[in-house]
Image (cartoon, helix red, strand yellow):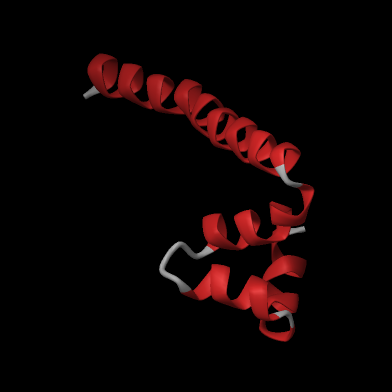
Length: 70
């Protein structure tokens, strides 16, 4: 879905400005979800929290491996 948004961004001015303001994918997702109003902001918060929680077990596992085996 992200690849589709990025491919369509040059054709939609608000998406293009969100993508090119230095925020890259975060700005693009904010621009895509902006018409949803408060729901869009809520979804962005959920996405931000779920991204870090999805990465935490992997980082913990890699850290544990380094301590044990190196």
